[in-house]
Length: 396
Image 1 (tube, rainbow, N blue to C red):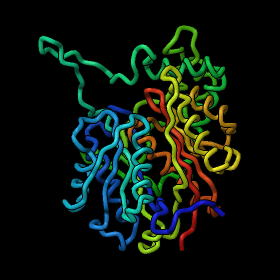
Image 2 (cartoon, rainbow, N blue to C red; image 1 turned 30 degrees about the vertical axis):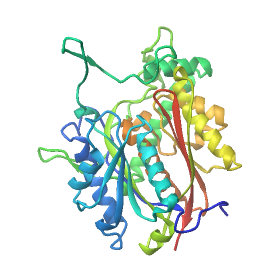
Image 3 (tube, rainbow, N blue to C red; image 1 turned 90 degrees about the vertical axis):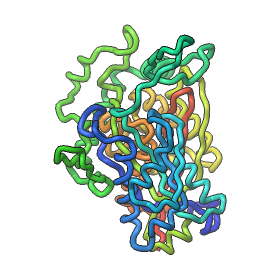
Image 4 (cartoon, helix red, strand yellow; image 1 turned 135 degrees about the horizontal axis):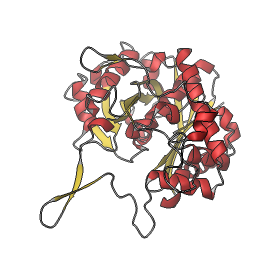
């Protein structure tokens, strides 16, 4: 049995999860803005939760977004999805962790006594992200590619440079990185062929009569010889290449978070109980290990080790940081990211953390093991990481 649960009217549980296909930036979804990616996911979640969940029951829409145009994409997408004007929305920005942190926030609102129904997740349209610029003293624009995440005195490396730092610091070899990335592609291809993504995917009308129904990142053509041909990208003589790094993607993912009591009233048969969450900070130069710091503290607070966890999903921004975090936590990479990860599917920044939870719910349902523990982890720019611990539970 899972220990330390809250009363049923305050125990958070995730009862539904959906995502769009993840497609390469400036590709199949390039004409859709963030709210247009997210709105179909929200509509699908309402339908998945059964006739008991009418739109008016939604207490809030909590959405993560990293490189959008500001405003409040959560509110915009909620209205685009047809939710009543009485349903509010709030947008969260913790960069790559935004989607997972949005789910964390919704779960904490339930635990605080909200007993409401929340739609939470993340979205990113890198293809339509606005150009950004600083204003010079003379009023002219100085464009920049990314925001500053840490004071320069502490180091504020680009993501690839930080991955190289982790590879050196934690002694993660090029061979291990390449093999892990190749396995991610193979697993994603196998999952797609077996239909393991089908129930979570929301097809998108992408203009010109085109309907996008599947992820476009996994590559059947990759093999060891081709992986070995990729040159280091971020450091001379380095080990991080285009082959063992993720690619930028457009996409959205979201879940339904409510209390166990409300879930039963809605007729939900099962879900992921949210047992705990944590966000930790690390040195910005080694930002890729942030997830391990958060997970270690979270598991320790529950008297657990990684060996107690049955399902693990980690955002594979780079093979180097993924393997470093697994090594630090004592997780065998063979038992994590069972259906592949961002190395094959792509990294849709603000959505990626919510994709992890979507995958965990699907895997837990496929396993059907009562009270099986599941862990979602993501490392974050600026030297942070967020982790969330779940347990699968049949509610009916």
